[in-house]
Length: 236
Image (cartoon, rainbow, N blue to C red):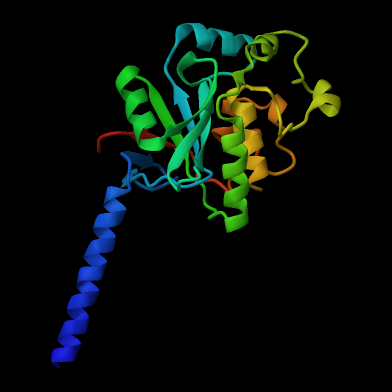
């Protein structure tokens, strides 16, 4: 009996430890809405492959995106694992900067919410746990892109007839290049997800915008990613 009591005690202690560990690894909350069900607010536990979308509500960028035939969200990144095992968001040009960066997930989300009042962050959580090989490939790719330039000229071309996007042009020009000297945010996220084996072949990086990935209207990504959920730092 004493042995059984000791075993039960150890199991309870172990469960409490795991619960505390999971809680400590959460970053804010996501507000999940399912059809016909009440909205649920749950802790956000980032994992490799999560797609994070940002909308700082900039009037200028919203107008430029509309001119290009798209709309908010205005920026995005993908969660990757660094060589030291920590999770980061891989982004091209975060907050209108001109470089690719790997940013600590918790720090990045908190900073964006603090610096852009009234902004919106939505997250598509990855349903799939990456294999060891997929994770290593994603890490290697992400770290090779860190510090590269933002593709300012290619971004400006999105509002002209010289872009690759378009019903006819995409038949000949759509592609996913895995080694560029400069990146647009959505290009980089698609390339990274392609390296990890997450995106289907139908998703081509150079003709994809954040709006195309935040829902399943242009591409059905429901097999790999949960529906987009609004993120907040505090539980609402």
